[in-house]
View 1 (tube, rainbow, N blue to C red):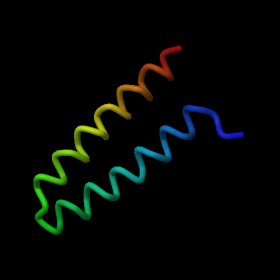
View 2: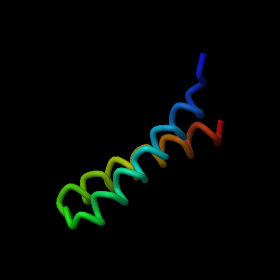
View 3: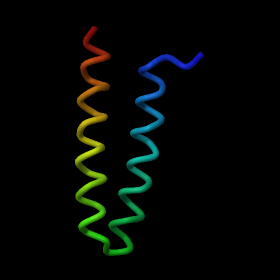
View 4: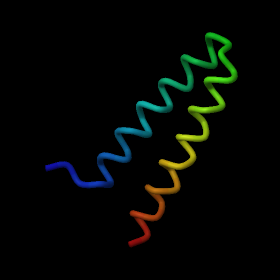
Length: 51
């Protein structure tokens, strides 16, 4: 079973890839939403690692 830290890291990796491709395509509104989600996932990872 995958632990929460690994799951969050995989989600963050995918979000970064999505964000990069979205920015390359010039979809700034979509990129802003992805950046917000990335921020939330990064915060959750930081909190998990601090335990």
